[in-house]
Structure formats: structure tokens, C-alpha cells
Amino acid sequence: MLTDSARETINEVVASHKQMPGALLPILHGIQDAVGYIPAEAVDSIARELNLSRAEVHGVVTYYHHFRSEPAGKHVVQICRAEACQSMGSERLWAHACLHLDSDGHKPTKDGVFTVEPVYCLGLCASSPSMAIDGKVHARVSVEKFNTLVAQARSRA
Ligand code: FES
Image (cartoon, rainbow, N blue to C red; front, side, top):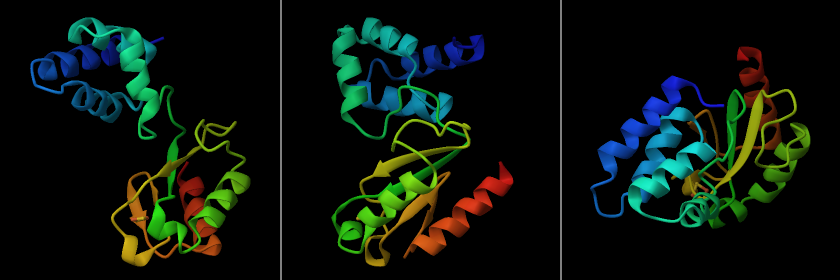
């Protein structure tokens, strides 16, 4: 159930972007930045305001890995799985992250502390493999470095 504040924020984001060409993606980014995910209620509102079907909006939300359909854990761990990072072992890092945090690679962990997500380039290709925790990017991430970064985040939880 959305809070009144979240509902108001969603309405403001939709109202401030709906007249621009290609408004759907800026609206989705704006809502996720403000609320942390794209609530089902927001999908209804966006569809109505942009004269799209609910399925069209839902299709865009689920097409892009970036968008979440439910709230994230307290800390968001993003592992880059794009080509440059893959060539430097990011698939091993991804598997380790999912195993270490008991994550399915999208939904929050059972304790709600972490969400592990794939990303497709963090702009640190020359220093791959890369990851981000809560938006802060880290380069040349080994399994050991990952464990240290996650332990630091957990201690802040
Ligand atoms: S491919 Fe991973 S940071 Fe660019």
C-alpha cells in the first residue's frame, strides 16, 4: 500500500513530464529515483495519463533491468554483467554475490538488507570487473573485495 506522500510524488512526476515527447522513460526514472521502485498503482496512473495500455507500461518496466516492481533492500548491490566486465570475470563475481547474499539476483534478500541486481556498464570498463553499492561504484572487484564492501555495508545496516 502506497503512502500518501509516495502517491503525491508519483502524481507530481507524471504531471511534470507527461507533455514531453517520449515521456514514459523519464517518468519511470523519476518515480524510481523518488520512490525506489515502480508501484503497480503508478503503472495505472502512467497508463491513464499517457493514454497507453497498462500492458504497454508494464512491458517497458519489465523490459529494462533498471526498473524494479517492488521495493529494494536497504542496500542495492549492482554487479556489472556487460562485455568488458564479463571478460574480466564478472560472471564469477555475479554468481558469488548471489550465493554469498542468498539472492535470486533481483528481489531483496530475506532479511531485507540487500538487493542484488545486474547492471550493464557502470562506466568503469577499463577497470573491470565493476560493481556499485548504493550508487557508489567500485573498480577491479575481486571476490575478496566484494566481501569487504558488503561487510562494510552490512555494518551500516
Ligand atoms: S562493462 Fe562493466 S563497467 Fe563497462
